[in-house]
Image (spheres, rainbow, N blue to C red):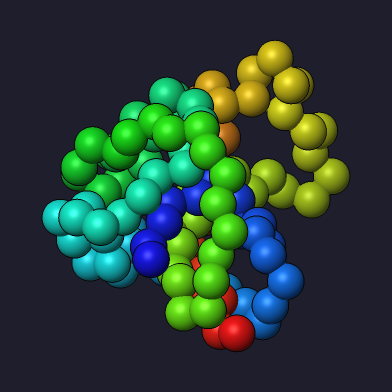
Length: 114
């Protein structure tokens, strides 16, 4: 199974591998989007990721349990060390935020190996 996550979260016990992707690699992995299940729970996050992938991303606030060989495209904010955390009332409000505009984000591939 293939998923989209907004954090590199361990969804079940196992061995995982995580690597960073360029926007081009993320687009290649995502392809047409067929067979990819979004777990993105915030519309603003889905809209922002849609800009990177040039394809719509569904808002779908669900939890998953990755199984061996499942993969997930991860799109998350990565603030500089020492930065204050995002206020909980602003969580999910990342589209065109100063954080995304200056590149405090990453795209990654999370794969469960066993």
